[in-house]
Amino acid sequence: MPSFQTSPGTRDILPPQAGRWRAFSAQFADTVESAGYECIIPPMFEDLGVFLRLGDATDVVTKEMYDFEDKGGRRVALRPEHTAGICRSFAQHRPTTPWKVWYSGSNFRYEKAQAGRYRQFDQVGIEVLGSTDALLDVEVIALGWQFFQSLGLKNVVLMLNSLGDPADRAAYIEALRQYLESRSSELSEEARATLQRNPLRVLDSKRVQDKPVIIDAPTIAQFLSEDARGHFETVKAGLDAIGVQYEVNEGLVRGLDYYQRTVFEYVSTSLDSAQTAVGGGGRYDGLVEDLGGPSTPGVGFALGIDRTLLACDSENVFELGAPQMDAFIVDVVDGMTALRLSDQLRAAGFTVDRAYDGRSMKSQMKVADRSGARLAIIIGEDEAAAGNCTVRNLMTSEQQVILQAELVPHLASIVGERNPRRNTQ
RNA sequence: GUGGGCGUAGCUCAGUUGGUUAGAGCGCCAGGUUGUGGUCCUGGAGGCCGGGGGUUCGAGACCCCUCGUCCACCCCA
Image 1 (cartoon, rainbow, N blue to C red):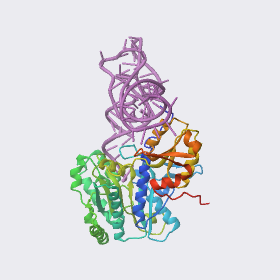
Image 2 (tube, rainbow, N blue to C red):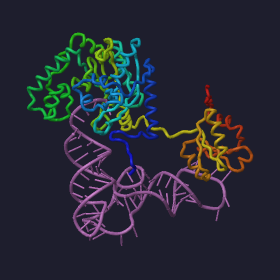
Image 3 (cartoon, rainbow, N blue to C red):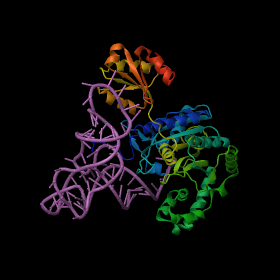
Image 4 (cartoon, rainbow, N blue to C red):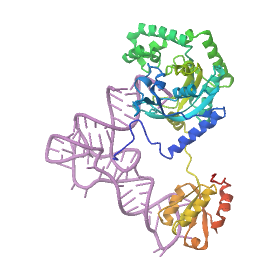
């Protein structure tokens, strides 16, 4: 056993899996940048107060926060999600609205690790600040949807609900509390405890014992104000108009307290684990103000990278490609030619790898094969003396001898033209 | 935080009722008559059997503790 291992709930994303993560983020960026969202990179830790706004009844705040005092005596916390920090950023810099941003990065929550759940986990997401337009909710929801489609996922369903305006929500919570208390003897012990803290969350219970009580519970729909109802209707009409299928789920409540009006969740139906929500979001019109900024509406979502890739695995989509290289240099003389040629070819824009430690030709050829290179460039004693090299096509096994000086145009004729990597100084 | 399963080579796993030098496949390295990979053959390296106590003449196997991991609850992405 090595002396050190990754901390619980964290892990190394090794190659080649890490390459898949990179491709994932790149594809997400491509999707949302097509809609005018720009990349934002907020800090990984902030004043603890920023995150307390997620809600003092939430587990995220009460027991999962990685908070500590820094050497200057400041109370700070590793971010458990991105939204609060982005709202803090908005309040601090006051950009013009609508401010449309996307992000990709790690979050931290002190939980016990499980399938699709880690202490350090990565999300991509978008946020828009400064507009109450219900059709913006539609755009946000549709972009997430479109991204799942672009990955090739088929078994993702969109759940939709409205939590109403703060007053509606409060009235509903009160009605729900009264109802649940009236039937508390039928609830599980755990659900009764949840009821004391946050009645909405009881609706999320997975226990069979609680199901009958939940089914008969009052629904939020009856409590929506005229405005909130209109907003919700517009969102649904917008989704219908662009053909995004959804399912209204009145039991859908989200884990963070700042949501109001539209909430939604993307659920994978091809995951067997308990964690099937691959993404979720909603509207949080009061959050910026809570953080001391001007009253500013906001809407956004976050997608879990791990869980989404898990869903991709189970649907056999967005798979890893085999490694690829243009050329691999085999030098059995002294390695100097490999050094010189790899340097030249890389500068000319090709992807080139080589072997080290002066190993046998057979050994170097094996590494060339493993590298996924299309061509092997072989330098033996003969080639070194004559200033040429043998170029072997590793797919067809055809090979020919050419002058080293002609390597760049020769490679271009086989693998295609490349843009030179120039030093721009 | 609560409950359950599991921890043996880099990876996936075998290891009979506790009994001598702990195995396989894959991967890795080296060879297969001297310049060439992907197939095949041969050989090699690599494990204080997660860690610590205990029971025993003897423990990878049994007991206790601990750490890690997986799964579920909880919660969430």
